[in-house]
Length: 268
Image (cartoon, rainbow, N blue to C red):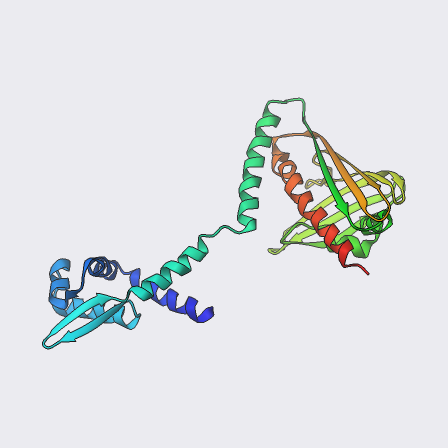
């Protein structure tokens, strides 16, 4: 793959020169003699020869000698290789799709907040059925070692996590991005019934250390060998500046709960 990429880069570098690109366009119609190419360019033949030699060295053009004539033609296979490589870059990744959806969600959230000057309120609900007893799901929410394995969206790392599953307990989360940027959230546990129900606040903190909005999270667990896990998040008191964070709750928690299910499935 690296060899192919290097070859494509070399071809693109040659094609970046305007005169050589024009030569390729000319040869795409049909093969030309060097003299014909020079005539199309309005250039001297020695200059044209140098450009053709550069294209030939990169594998884009081939020179066929027919007696005293030199005929230049395209190596279409090399251009097919470039086209295939560029085509691969054009295929959207899951991250691209998620980013597009996130941008749409931010715009929609900003519009709703602007229509609600008293403070935007929204409710999100997530439901998962996980093939494990509720006690194991509860452990994933409350054991710091397990919590750190799933409580971060893609491309983030958990620097610190804490959820004290007792009324009045602390909820703390600090994430780090690849560029070193850090994001802190905090809250408090208001209710805890081990293996059954957990209610807590959790919201991102501003530069002053204060929550940027109110967000109440209610987790309920039911079932025996298969756990029905439901998470409800109620957000209130947000302004337009918080729109990107509120819009990120749905895709963010979707990733988190998928990761939680994976952690539980892998745990002996």
